[in-house]
Image 1 (cartoon, one colour):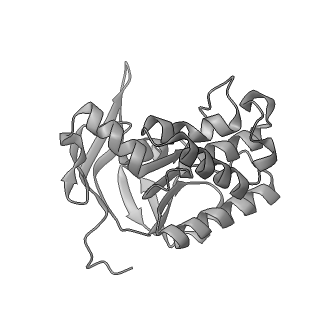
Image 2: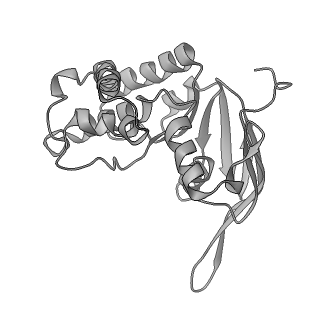
Amino acid sequence: MDNSLTPLMSLQSVSKCFHTKTSKIEILNNACLNIYKGETIAVVGSSGIGKSTLLHIIGTLDKPDSGKIYFQKNDLFSYGDEEIASFRNSKIGFVFQFHYLLQGFSALENVMMPGLIAHKKKKIVEKSALNMLERVGLLLRSSHRVEDLSGGEQQRVALARALVMKPEILLADEPTGNLDQKNSKSIHALIDELNKELGMTVIVVTHNNELARMMKKIVTLADGEIIPV
């Protein structure tokens, strides 16, 4: 990676705290991180240290207490709520530990949702969604309601939904945490393929050493700092 290039995204002096009745929990303390187009990054660290919170801040789902987050030199949190939502839907794909799939809807309908929200033509969105379901090995289950799928199948639907808009950045929080070894390897391979095929930037929070080693960069979150390994 040529670090002389302008970062796709940059976190500059970002701080975030949570307050309980008796204490202040510091998640990030003037943390800095440059993220480049096509880069793959694993975020590691002990449980409860704030890795998921970091991912939410990068994805504009949560705001920092202080500091700036830039995407292509634009200050993301200077946007209004609608602009941020539009940015998030078009530029970022999310895979969470919990699937957040829409119950009562089919796998296909769930994967189509980001494209429909973006007001893209239904036939085009459906074609893209079916293609992505095929890539995660669920084409034959596309018409099944998500509550009728196994936990591992639901996780793969969530991944397909995150990828259907071909986002510039994929943010994944333990993306293979609920999968068996065979399906984990296939998802690892798919993430690697899409990174190379689309130049998609990938940031994963993981305790899976195999997945972490696949990433070109590993950073550790510790004591409120983002530390390159």
